[in-house]
Image (cartoon, helix red, strand yellow):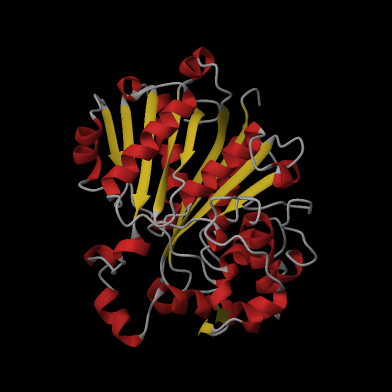
Length: 383
């Protein structure tokens, strides 16, 4: 069953806070939920489906109770950074199956204020990997080093991704980092895990967001401009008993599935929201999604390609590299900014002219070991 046109994003809200020491995680979820529903012109009594993930205190049952939802469809998905890209697809599937008609999706976290430890659910391999230095930066650094070895990618090319994100973040008053940077400044920042410098890494913030996904019938009844769900894809990439190739991600499978369902081509995409946990994540993802050939990502992002005036504008809110990255779940904010672009509501300096089609992609897990991908293609409500 295709979800093309089966559902619309009617509400989107990004919590403005980046450091929230006096706000609970549950409260962030509530504030985001109320904000997204208000954006759609709906309220909590309209919701009959609720989706969340591991960042929601107590999961969907506890949060539905906390929000006072009379939901007849509940779901919890945990695909790391790709979670909330996938959950838009899951909401559309539930709506298409007649399970619900107004789905609320919430996310929130306080890693900056409360700190973040690797949870017990990090996986069965955790006790064997963590003692030997496995961490998020180390894992992505392995992928970056291998990409450089195989294809000649340079640290300066990685830095171009940060430069683009920072150029956009200066126009976002809520962005955690609002100062533009140069390639030289990225390369001059301290090494975290060679070859990744501090400015190659995402920020750590508190915050959250929410989305409201509705049926076509509900969308038609709303005054708010909506965004149509056109296609989606998900995929997991495993370690293959140690024979893992670090130069590609699950996007090589999730991307084609989303493009096929949406019935569009790469040339049709006006804007991309790509989870930028690290600069290398973006370069490999662009290759795997098919915007350039494998190994050409470094050259592709050079010369301002990713900036708002470039050939393929990306992350016009500043992304996870500069704007917002609560609870390692950047898929939510990536989707929210894509909705803004399609509605023509991004910051004026970075609004993509005639933005009709947007691609959203999330990466979960670790590029250096096991990981998952989710791709979403969104369009104007009359697409």
